Length: 167
Image (cartoon, rainbow, N blue to C red):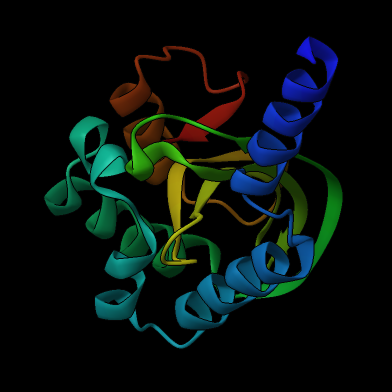
């Protein structure tokens, strides 16, 4: 009887957690990159969660993305390097769903970068939002030194040979 109860409980928990839908997560990032290339920063605001904006206020993040585009150009190619997903069940409905960790090699017009995303797909609504997003330059080309110094100073870096992360 106890084994039967445990099996039923496990089935219910597995059934109640979110279904991993990697294609939806990939399409989400593709849509973000398309909005970026189109300069549609108003729609880009909606890709990010309230939790993201608690650590990187919208009034600071969106201008950084605009400046990034002005300095480094549009995305030419974006290839997924790795991904991971975990389905999460919680008593609180707002935390039920799937957490994705996605890593992309991204070629901008002037730099090669690694973009990392942590996104959440809510089980009830199916909505997807970015919880964390970092952009790390791995290959420097045609850069404006004043922008590099500004980015490093923003992140607390003093040496322009270090990795650059805007997050």
